[in-house]
Image 1 (cartoon, rainbow, N blue to C red):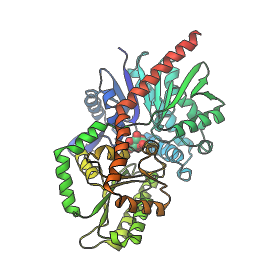
Image 2 (image 1 turned 90 degrees about the vertical axis):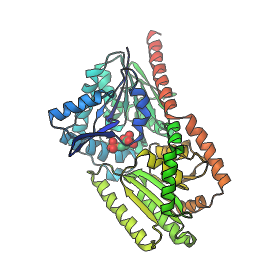
Image 3 (image 1 turned 120 degrees about the vertical axis):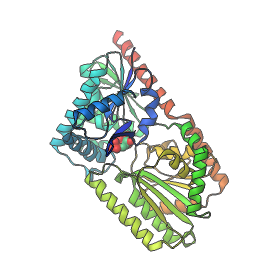
Length: 473
Ligand code: F6P
């Protein structure tokens, strides 16, 4: 029977080495929850890296066996591959370029060689398990070459590709060496999906200017094949977030946190992976400006800032961590009192029930990335606000701002605007909060992750049929 094979750099389960041996835990990020319903069905499978270097064959076998029970097949990376393909080309070349930070991008042939080699390695791992009738769904910027590698090996196969980060303007793409090879690699898919119409337009423009292929309604002729390009804003598992937030445990924890923070203290919540794209330092400066300009809020507002460790071997991330530590220390040093801490900063990940309690507790969610493909935290906050109170402040440069236009949408570079908007959010009447939330909840509930998967898969089936019809014409 035909299966669906999901392929991404990271598996939804990560392996860690502990004193007691190998430990398995869910990976961070929305992808795993989103695709859980797909890869766990029937004989479906998820192919990807378990997140740790495992040289030992016995350990590798243990991981293969354990993950097989949960429909996963690991691709093991060597230490050099982790450094050059994952930290290197993926996160020091593509990531900064695609997020409009070209000044952080490095262009090194050695990293490019590793990227090509690991994409080939993933291709082989997929070929080891895929049959000609299977549907292969490749995810994200670490595997841009994989669709075309698979196409060469399995010319008739059904291949979808989804990019979870922004696709940048042609002006960024033209700077990137190997840009034509990367676009060519992506075009091996039958269907290419992006979070927003804007990213899709940028992609089509680069394909046109760098490869000379024009498009008609998102259809690109590549040799004898028609490739469809479209936008699919990713959603969340709405019911899961709403149910967890309404649970007794989340309510109990919320009360506990409320008592610790103080009954009359407003809570502003910020949650991100540690990343320079997230605008964390700029957000701290905006919060500092709020304290400077609104003395009546001193002692009355706390920023709860959760930063999830990420890519800590990459230089820019190490520097950012130091900058955040310093800023938090300085602002707290300037403003704190015996009874009040302006910024409560946590550098670790949180379990779902605690997150749900924090979403419940928050009066305002402050989500101000400089660039973000989508930002699922914004949608999680909306879904978790089951009592109809809370204000979302959202960067205009997060993909989510296209759908969540009832948030207070700001320019994250404009510190004064962010501080002003925070002030407005903290004083917004409950009826207004409820009105904005209700309209955002309707959108997030309707276009949830299940809908996202269904629409993507339907479009993939559509383009395959269209290709067949065109071939017989
Ligand atoms: O946002 C892009 C993305 O690759 C997500 O899919 C993932 O959750 C996140 O970045 C984490 O990245 P990494 O795998 O490098 O920890």
